[in-house]
Amino acid sequence: MLENAFPRVLNEGYGGSGSSLRMQSASGATITDTDGKTYIDMAMGGGTCILGHANPLVVEAVNKQMCHGSLFTVANPYAEDFAELLGGAIPGCDQFVFASTGSEATLRAIRLARAVTDKKKIGVFSGGWHGSHDQVLVEEDYSRDSENMPAMMPKSAGILDEVLENLVFLPYNTEAAFDLIRDNKDDLAAVMIEPAQGSNPRDDVEGFLRDLRDVTRTSGILLIFDEVITGFRLALGGAQERFGISADIVTYGKTLGGGLPIGVVSGAPEVLSYITTDHGGGKPRFYNGGTFSANPLTVAAGMAVVRYLSETREETYARLERAGETVRGELNDYCLSNGVPAHVIGIGSMFRTIFTDKPVRSRRERDMMEIPYENQRDFYRRLLSSGVHVGANGINFVSLAHTAEDLDKVCACYQEALSSLTAGS
Figure 1 (cartoon, rainbow, N blue to C red):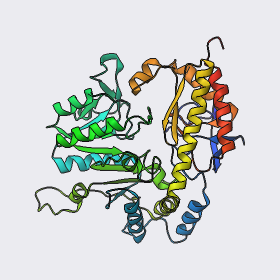
Figure 2 (cartoon, rainbow, N blue to C red):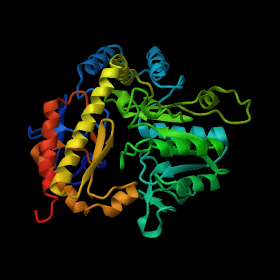
Figure 3 (tube, one colour):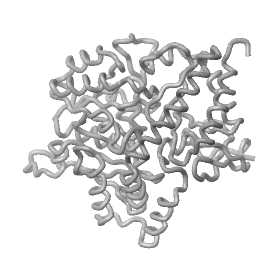
Figure 4 (cartoon, rainbow, N blue to C red):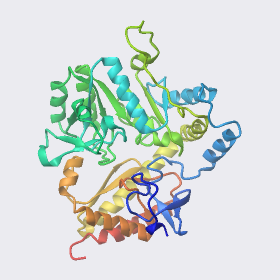
């Protein structure tokens, strides 16, 4: 019935793609569609559900708060408690701006960087993703660029040319980016980067990130870590903790909300203090409002997640790390042993399939070397038919709800789908 129905929901990823697949419920590490078929879920709410779907701690916290109200639109003590909890988890961060989504968090981070520096331009990297708002909704135009001088184009209709004029598009994972940053230092308010790109989640970027930190600091440019995906996943304190690198502004989302929508902006005290500073009429105040920002339901869910992760810190992250390494190792051994033109890359508990046996350094190289999209789509259809669900963005996330048996099945299903990529199959 749904296949022939007039599409009413047009959001990308939720019904506008032509797929008849509809998910109706989820529990632990599984998700069930409207036909009653259950899959091992490797999307896990886009990485959000690190404790698993419908985790009892989160459900109890949300239900309890619902009895006391879900939205006040005025300051509430729950947000203060949450901020205190976050301050103990994230290195160097003591103040927090709450928003409703990761996209809204990056939007506010950009606004803050421009306000603090009085400069207009923002540096973003090819292959990066910073949300669905116009300020950063661009991608690389391979038809008119070079490896060290990428050209950008809007990722959507409706984006103004003026948006592109205020961005500096940077090549990823290459020193050429640093030359562009230095050349534009007088105009750049900030450079924004995912510490591990969702399109290219690699575990060998620490040196690049350290060099980026040095270049931005010496050039008088703010560094924004977009940790909407990596925050509370790569470590309790995210990539900042894992790599020992402090950014000037940091954004969070996904995992932090326990399955409910959230965005958070934090960072260095000297940058965050701009928000509360009285500028004496010389500048307009920095606007941070939002109807659903720090709403009690999201805060309740988030506190349940962060408390658990904080209390089980060593055990939890060691377990997630081992699980991610095990899956990647098994799948890469299979590809190598069977001549499959693919490999798996990742960091911590996140990974994705790269559809070439050649090493890739960036999203650009990935796109240039991979097999045609149609073959990749068939691969994921095979996975789904065998009982493993991967999100439309191709990123896999291991949660604490995934058992060893779950991951063994995931590896077996992956290997079966990978076998279809060998020559002559």
